[in-house]
Amino acid sequence: MPNLSKTELRKKLRALRREHATGIPETVRGLLFRHPPAPVLDMIPDSGTIGLYNALPEEAPTAAYAAFFHERGHAIALPRFSKVDAAMEFALHSVPHAESDLEIGPFGMLQPGTSADLLAPDVLFVPLVGFTERGDRLGQGGGHYDRWLGQHPGTIAIGLAWDCQLVDSLPTEPHDRKLSAVVTPTRFYGPFDA
Image (cartoon, rainbow, N blue to C red; front, side, top):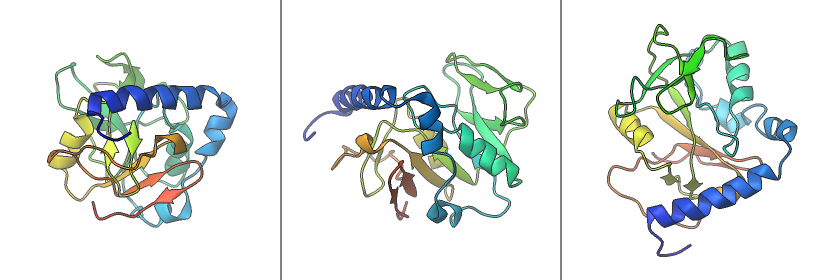
Protein backbone atom coordinates (compact mmCIF):
# COMPACT_ATOMS: atom_id res chain seq x y z
CA MET A 1 0.00 0.00 0.00
CA PRO A 2 2.63 2.49 -1.08
CA ASN A 3 2.22 6.27 -0.85
CA LEU A 4 -0.94 6.21 1.27
CA SER A 5 -1.38 8.61 4.16
CA LYS A 6 -1.79 7.23 7.68
CA THR A 7 -5.52 8.02 7.49
CA GLU A 8 -5.91 6.12 4.20
CA LEU A 9 -3.85 3.21 5.52
CA ARG A 10 -5.95 3.02 8.68
CA LYS A 11 -9.14 2.87 6.65
CA LYS A 12 -7.83 0.07 4.40
CA LEU A 13 -6.19 -1.92 7.18
CA ARG A 14 -9.20 -1.63 9.52
CA ALA A 15 -11.45 -3.03 6.78
CA LEU A 16 -8.99 -5.86 6.11
CA ARG A 17 -8.65 -6.61 9.84
CA ARG A 18 -12.45 -6.58 10.34
CA GLU A 19 -13.02 -8.91 7.37
CA HIS A 20 -10.30 -11.27 8.57
CA ALA A 21 -11.40 -11.36 12.23
CA THR A 22 -15.11 -11.81 11.49
CA GLY A 23 -14.22 -14.88 9.43
CA ILE A 24 -12.74 -16.58 12.50
CA PRO A 25 -15.18 -18.13 14.98
CA GLU A 26 -14.93 -16.43 18.39
CA THR A 27 -13.95 -19.67 20.12
CA VAL A 28 -11.05 -20.10 17.70
CA ARG A 29 -9.90 -16.46 18.11
CA GLY A 30 -9.13 -17.04 21.78
CA LEU A 31 -7.19 -20.21 20.99
CA LEU A 32 -4.99 -18.39 18.48
CA PHE A 33 -3.68 -16.15 21.29
CA ARG A 34 -4.00 -18.68 24.12
CA HIS A 35 -0.55 -18.13 25.58
CA PRO A 36 2.54 -16.14 24.57
CA PRO A 37 5.21 -17.87 22.48
CA ALA A 38 8.55 -18.74 24.10
CA PRO A 39 10.45 -15.74 22.63
CA VAL A 40 7.93 -13.41 24.31
CA LEU A 41 8.25 -15.20 27.63
CA ASP A 42 12.02 -14.69 27.41
CA MET A 43 11.36 -10.91 27.28
CA ILE A 44 9.19 -10.83 30.45
CA PRO A 45 10.80 -9.92 33.79
CA ASP A 46 9.92 -12.42 36.54
CA SER A 47 7.87 -9.97 38.60
CA GLY A 48 7.05 -7.54 35.82
CA THR A 49 3.70 -5.80 35.56
CA ILE A 50 1.93 -6.74 32.33
CA GLY A 51 -0.08 -4.10 30.48
CA LEU A 52 -2.81 -5.30 28.15
CA TYR A 53 -5.81 -3.78 26.37
CA ASN A 54 -9.48 -4.74 26.28
CA ALA A 55 -9.72 -6.01 22.71
CA LEU A 56 -12.40 -4.88 20.32
CA PRO A 57 -14.05 -7.74 18.38
CA GLU A 58 -11.74 -7.27 15.37
CA GLU A 59 -8.52 -6.86 17.39
CA ALA A 60 -6.18 -9.64 18.47
CA PRO A 61 -7.71 -10.93 21.72
CA THR A 62 -5.98 -10.45 25.08
CA ALA A 63 -8.20 -12.28 27.62
CA ALA A 64 -6.14 -15.49 27.54
CA TYR A 65 -2.89 -13.54 27.96
CA ALA A 66 -4.39 -11.78 31.00
CA ALA A 67 -5.30 -15.11 32.59
CA PHE A 68 -1.95 -16.67 31.63
CA PHE A 69 0.17 -13.93 33.22
CA HIS A 70 -2.12 -13.52 36.25
CA GLU A 71 -1.82 -17.24 37.02
CA ARG A 72 1.96 -16.79 36.98
CA GLY A 73 1.82 -14.04 39.59
CA HIS A 74 2.10 -10.95 37.38
CA ALA A 75 0.02 -7.86 38.09
CA ILE A 76 -2.22 -7.03 35.12
CA ALA A 77 -2.85 -3.41 34.11
CA LEU A 78 -5.35 -2.03 31.60
CA PRO A 79 -5.64 1.46 30.09
CA ARG A 80 -7.80 3.95 31.97
CA PHE A 81 -8.98 7.42 30.98
CA SER A 82 -10.55 9.89 33.40
CA LYS A 83 -12.12 11.77 30.46
CA VAL A 84 -11.89 11.77 26.66
CA ASP A 85 -9.12 14.37 26.47
CA ALA A 86 -7.13 13.01 29.44
CA ALA A 87 -3.83 11.20 29.14
CA MET A 88 -3.95 7.40 29.13
CA GLU A 89 -2.87 5.80 32.36
CA PHE A 90 -2.76 2.17 33.46
CA ALA A 91 -4.52 0.72 36.47
CA LEU A 92 -4.72 -2.67 38.15
CA HIS A 93 -7.11 -5.21 36.62
CA SER A 94 -7.51 -7.36 39.72
CA VAL A 95 -9.95 -9.92 38.29
CA PRO A 96 -8.51 -10.91 34.88
CA HIS A 97 -10.73 -14.02 34.69
CA ALA A 98 -13.80 -11.78 34.69
CA GLU A 99 -14.68 -8.12 34.25
CA SER A 100 -16.23 -7.50 37.67
CA ASP A 101 -13.63 -4.85 38.57
CA LEU A 102 -14.13 -2.89 35.33
CA GLU A 103 -16.47 -0.04 34.44
CA ILE A 104 -17.39 1.81 31.27
CA GLY A 105 -14.91 4.61 30.55
CA PRO A 106 -15.32 7.82 28.53
CA PHE A 107 -14.63 6.01 25.23
CA GLY A 108 -17.36 3.44 25.93
CA MET A 109 -14.86 0.69 26.70
CA LEU A 110 -14.38 -1.28 29.90
CA GLN A 111 -11.54 -0.04 32.08
CA PRO A 112 -10.40 -0.37 35.72
CA GLY A 113 -12.52 1.62 38.15
CA THR A 114 -11.39 4.89 39.69
CA SER A 115 -10.37 3.15 42.92
CA ALA A 116 -7.97 0.76 41.13
CA ASP A 117 -4.28 1.40 41.82
CA LEU A 118 -2.24 3.06 39.09
CA LEU A 119 0.54 0.88 37.67
CA ALA A 120 3.31 1.39 35.12
CA PRO A 121 3.63 -1.78 33.03
CA ASP A 122 7.11 -3.19 32.49
CA VAL A 123 5.76 -5.02 29.42
CA LEU A 124 2.96 -3.52 27.38
CA PHE A 125 1.00 -5.52 24.80
CA VAL A 126 -0.39 -2.95 22.38
CA PRO A 127 -3.19 -3.03 19.82
CA LEU A 128 -2.44 -1.94 16.30
CA VAL A 129 -3.94 -1.38 12.89
CA GLY A 130 -0.78 -2.23 10.93
CA PHE A 131 2.85 -3.20 11.50
CA THR A 132 6.08 -3.88 9.61
CA GLU A 133 8.70 -6.61 10.00
CA ARG A 134 10.98 -3.89 11.48
CA GLY A 135 8.67 -3.05 14.39
CA ASP A 136 6.94 0.04 13.01
CA ARG A 137 3.35 0.34 14.26
CA LEU A 138 0.27 2.10 12.96
CA GLY A 139 -2.16 2.69 15.82
CA GLN A 140 -5.74 3.90 15.98
CA GLY A 141 -4.71 7.51 15.45
CA GLY A 142 -5.17 8.99 18.93
CA GLY A 143 -1.48 8.78 19.82
CA HIS A 144 -2.22 7.46 23.33
CA TYR A 145 0.25 4.58 23.22
CA ASP A 146 3.00 6.61 21.52
CA ARG A 147 2.69 9.32 24.19
CA TRP A 148 2.64 6.82 27.05
CA LEU A 149 5.64 4.91 25.69
CA GLY A 150 7.48 8.19 25.10
CA GLN A 151 7.02 9.02 28.79
CA HIS A 152 8.06 5.52 29.90
CA PRO A 153 11.28 4.69 28.03
CA GLY A 154 12.50 1.18 28.59
CA THR A 155 9.01 -0.34 28.56
CA ILE A 156 8.91 -3.47 26.44
CA ALA A 157 6.16 -2.87 23.85
CA ILE A 158 4.83 -5.94 22.06
CA GLY A 159 2.21 -5.70 19.34
CA LEU A 160 -0.55 -8.27 18.99
CA ALA A 161 -1.93 -8.59 15.48
CA TRP A 162 -3.49 -10.75 12.83
CA ASP A 163 -1.14 -11.81 10.03
CA CYS A 164 -3.14 -9.72 7.53
CA GLN A 165 -2.02 -6.53 9.32
CA LEU A 166 1.58 -6.88 8.15
CA VAL A 167 2.61 -4.26 5.58
CA ASP A 168 5.91 -3.60 3.79
CA SER A 169 6.28 -0.05 5.10
CA LEU A 170 4.47 2.61 7.10
CA PRO A 171 4.81 6.38 7.13
CA THR A 172 6.49 7.26 10.42
CA GLU A 173 6.92 10.50 12.34
CA PRO A 174 9.36 11.41 15.12
CA HIS A 175 6.75 10.78 17.85
CA ASP A 176 5.98 7.23 16.62
CA ARG A 177 7.39 4.56 18.93
CA LYS A 178 8.77 1.32 17.55
CA LEU A 179 7.68 -1.97 19.00
CA SER A 180 10.01 -4.41 20.74
CA ALA A 181 8.29 -7.34 19.01
CA VAL A 182 5.06 -8.41 17.30
CA VAL A 183 3.08 -11.62 17.82
CA THR A 184 0.61 -12.96 15.25
CA PRO A 185 -1.18 -16.34 15.23
CA THR A 186 1.58 -17.77 13.02
CA ARG A 187 4.76 -15.75 13.68
CA PHE A 188 6.92 -13.89 16.15
CA TYR A 189 8.67 -10.80 14.78
CA GLY A 190 11.61 -9.40 16.71
CA PRO A 191 12.98 -8.60 19.08
CA PHE A 192 13.67 -5.20 17.58
CA ASP A 193 15.81 -2.37 18.87
CA ALA A 194 12.95 -0.12 19.96
